[in-house]
Length: 194
Image (tube, rainbow, N blue to C red; front, side):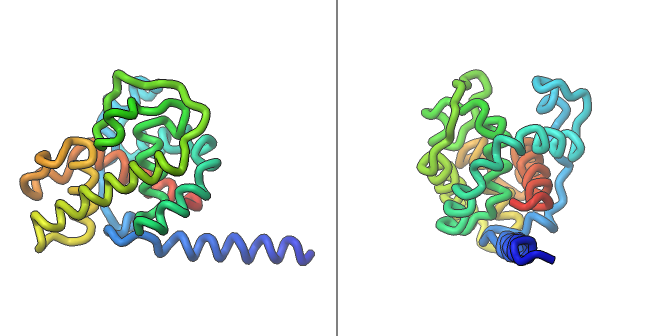
């Protein structure tokens, strides 16, 4: 075996081990989710829903998201958020960077499906702002519901990221469509090296 291939293999193994332990807010590998609602994939030509739809949408967006992996790793380390979760939010909100959600709403963590603008690059500061908003929402959920599990905090943070701070009033509010879809996409990205 050539030394170059051996080195590349070791680097890939190191990156895989490193990425498998990221995130202070729940373990996305073990979180169960029903995936996207049936309406999420329709605008992109899918006539099915659930985890299969979320995974297909993640797969479609992956070529664009690969170029942001270094940014997601840097931001993920800074905020202790799994890069796969960051990738899943970018996939859900911007189709992997093909479009960018209206910046006025994205800064507040509110998805506005009617206001997209084409973009050629998402900056590290945009990814950092989005991730910071998510961690702020998670910490708000932790303060409001101190007995919940880390997985519930992540779910609550994702639901309030999209629905606003007052969206989560009890554990019944932890199964919002945004959260279910993002978690299914994040699991897909985690299995594919994010």
